[in-house]
Image: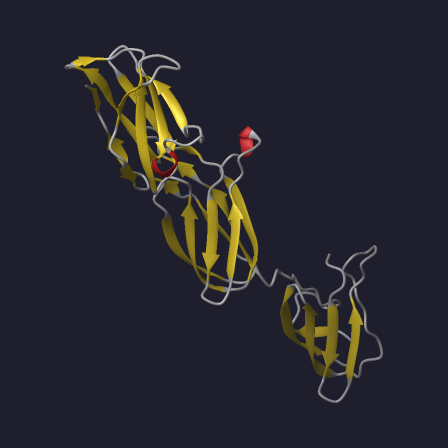
Length: 264
């Protein structure tokens, strides 16, 4: 049962009101002394629930003859006045493969009159990517999913009172930078490649990330924030001077940038 619901009974001349019980038996209500036979408009209302209105006829013996499933009681099922959007966000990995749950995705729903924002879960492991947006008034919403380094995706949904809309968006892969470091055409193994924000290179700011080239001189940075303006620096060993740098480069959301770096 649902407590705290205001019940208003009227036949146009006689109006009575009560509130459903919050204690046992929860949701029960009763109004006595009504004139019979008559037809009454019965309204159930609570601020967070969708109002329900019934037309109930009672004969001269006090038996409900129309407007309710029972001859002795008028029951109603209340539902929320607002809607929910729930689901799990996944993201495709760079280079293809099976999408996996994605945490820290910002989900926004805008109707033009109101906007709601939540973030997908990043912990615990079993809940990563899940989200729940509650309390949305009925209407049409543009729902947008955004994550760092990733091209946003949007969908349009129309919500009714009490509706639970489930969405399972799959984001495209995040931005990445990869390439080969070489010297005179030969891949450089074990070189240290540092990724900097171009505006911070040459300052005391540390690199955004570092990688070491493999046996083929290949390096890669995945799940990189974008759009950003980056610069790459190559060192042949730790604490050594820069052997080469890349030109400053703009990385766009979900871009898979290949940037080979030759060492003079």
